[in-house]
Image (tube, rainbow, N blue to C red):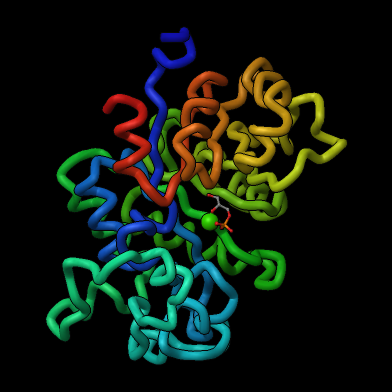
Length: 275
Ligand code: G3P
Ligand code: CA
């Protein structure tokens, strides 16, 4: 066993256990908690009437039986849709067989639109520490409203101002440095994760945008630029990698000493890590 493998890597369920239940549904998050995930990842968007909902795409077309942009729909419109719908082809395409549970009317809550508030309740009731990695989507367009609503909601759960970043069960992730800056300005101890799809020449030396402590590189960056990951670690940053679904990539991440693995398959990744 290498030295790197001796540290405990956090396993984060990406959009819930989204290989086993439709992404961003209560069913997927319940499954992730049952599977033993350390943390849950979710994307948040604002509805037309100002609610934060967990939806990845700008539109609901891919993941529900409805149509339209989240920002143009009210929460009541979204609540009428089914996010376990077979129109969620990306999910259903990966199924070899029917799942052993069905979308029955009594299971309606499991696959209807998930508000961030409901997800926070689920985490609060988990019976053990489950962390939450919340990704702000398209914050530029909403000019601060996503972050503003997010902080109001976190405050209601007593999560907006942790005593220290290292103790916070919630972190905010974004591809937008501006979004992270807004959060930091209002709540300096709430940890931020700067997501990266490529290595910006500006940050090649392992620096992150001012005040951000955690790097969030894609697995492609990790595969192609392992030395960059080592540089981030040497610079004192935590490294949270997305989206790691291949077990060989789990080994690579462990060897490089990353701090968190974000995956659609938390059970499989935990198994690979010997947990
Ligand atoms: O966890 C970060 C990752 O989710 C970013 O990409 O497109 O899946 O939101 P995306
Ligand atoms: Ca995301």
